[in-house]
Image (cartoon, rainbow over all chains, first blue to last red; front, side, top):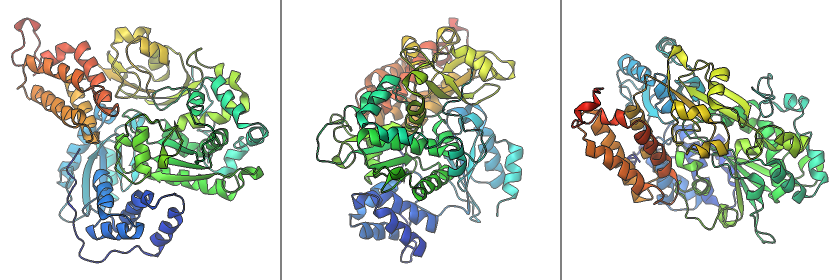
Length: 168
Length: 425
């Protein structure tokens, strides 16, 4: 359990764009209850905005026809929903068993020194955010790092260096 | 030692596309399937001895037969692709390298259990994998293998991918159902079991990806062909993920029943860097650890692992070399389960945090011998006192480390007896 109870307002109204709107309508037909759309609706929000602003919670609840507390519950329980803006490049480092055994700490230490932030932080220029996550299911090619959703396996400091230079 | 049943198409270029998958036999079992009654398929799977590959090893055909008869409610299938147990990475290969094998398996299962709506619950972290899977499903719809009239046989079937969002607990089958229904993943009390009252209160079967993906082979080749692999009670093959301190970590398909150490040496290249073996985790991080001595007699099947007081689990084997600090490893382990506790039951939510605190205290050089006893006591007081088995997934392995590597914990205690002669501090 981690404390993930704080929502932040973006300060502007939230609406799905055309593409997400259509995807919502496609998906809602796949479930017998509209509440099942809570997780998919949060994903659509995060795809569009990069995070889940407080305004989106009310929007999703309204759109589904449920209580905002239901949406809030899911948004705060599931750790992949970001409740604040992340860096333009979000780096996840697996910290669990096999990656732990094969040197994930060197990766964390290198990134901390190179980017100047610890896991859980966003760099001042907004270019990077760092997160230590639980097992990413790539144990046979540990240690593994996930950058903006893409997996990078058999990681070492040299590979990381070239990976970082390619990021905007 | 390796065999190619489930992994037959893994190394074929573009086998994730419908075109290439079909060239190599995908969906060719559907004529056979729809020519027989559903009960024939259930019997076939029962006869094959196929056991649930998610970790529990429950016979798949038997699970299906728990569905109540003559109910006026829809039946659902939820395919468990949460794959979050540390050291487990087998289902990912099926999702990305042969998703049509999984879809064909879903068709077979749904026909057998009379289900027209299936959900694949995939962990949120599988970002690139979900795209490959969704594309395969879209292709299957376009080609008429899913939808109103599956393969022109008059059977309707819809398959929907439901993404999780980073919660280990959603691999627990009732938490998974809660998550599909739009709630946080807190397991339900059982009974009622999902086969009676599951998704949306309807009869539901939940099977692991690898279990479902084993069905096309069984249908095409028969129960005896499947039973030709493995042991009498643990028939078939399994995708073993070998990781940790081995020379050649990776995914290997093997028949069940092979000697554990031989597999580590001959398949995975042995302990890396010429080091000595310290211990083996046989089936994912929640399975009790084996010492090298115990590992000598263990074979990779459900019965041998139970006889060695551990579990076959998910087939995720982790090799630990002589340099591993067991207390630090246990810290990493408890940290994981504490973080992933859903918070519903006090013994798990608070107890795992307490255990973590004790281990951290030992590692800081502030722990005492009595703390080691307390840790052991906590294991006994947390286990099986919760709605689900997440807490046991932590206490069972921790107890095994405490019992088998006690001296390493003692070495960290400030009031350790002098004669131990150890000082790791």
